Length: 121
Image 1 (cartoon, rainbow, N blue to C red):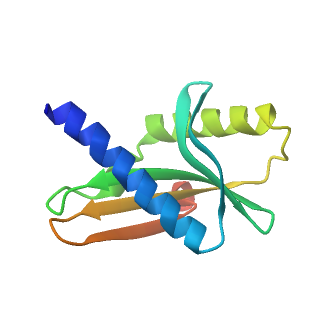
Image 2: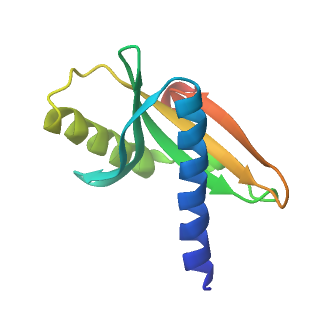
């Protein structure tokens, strides 16, 4: 398997892992891998009227900080996609982002969660 194919597969596994944890915590998955505007939303979830756009980053234990992946370009693409999702689903403009860095260790996976990471989380 190529390095790119491995990374894609690991990313999908991490998204599934995060989705299961969110569902166990009472969140409903509204969309997965939704594409619109200039970007993709990994997960769109809702609980008790609160809407979150979830970005999942799979990483290896030795990788640098996952927050480095949220540069200005990535933030812009996520905001564009979120705005398009809200318009396509006739939803109010009230939603937040949730960034989840999943460390895919050899035995145990762990996650760091940042609510509203664009604001310093």
